[in-house]
Length: 104
Length: 160
Image (cartoon, each protein chain N blue to C red):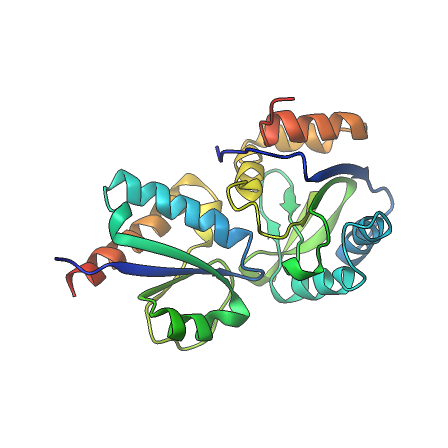
């Protein structure tokens, strides 16, 4: 039984670009048949450390500049909102990480 | 395209801002209007300005950029979106890259509470303006009524 992966999506306000990201990630998970194995949570950037700790998150995906050193892998995924090539690259990176975490 | 459902609780407005020179002026004018109409609290304007400095919202669409300033949900009393055309472009910093400046000609001020998570405004806006022709024709609009109509019908794809 593989592990359920918890992704934390964050942006400045925790409602706009993070919400956009979540939808794109969920669409891709659906395509790959992984929807049931992954959950996506939103938060604002100022709450990241707290949410990472309290939510037992596995992966951090962000649309803003962040310099912190976090306990989980971080992916900058602003590309999802730009052109299709950048979107694919960002989503591929997220999926690679998700699959790796599942195997752990 | 994102799925847009119920919209009756959201206020949509349009503005054409001539003679604005800075993003601060743009944000302040739009925020002041929303405050006077009772959609946001007094702190909203400053919160949105601060947020724009820390987490800029310019997007480098072509041939001119768009920006989607917004701030934390607690400053929003009733949800509203105002779309503004800036006939003379104004500099905004680029989302995710504070050191890069973009010439912005279309602004969407998103005063959202985050309750309608199924309404993905941002996604609809971004997808629409990935087409250069849409950027050019929207920026050329000088009728607030037309702006509002295109925003609802073509960008958000709301059936009226």
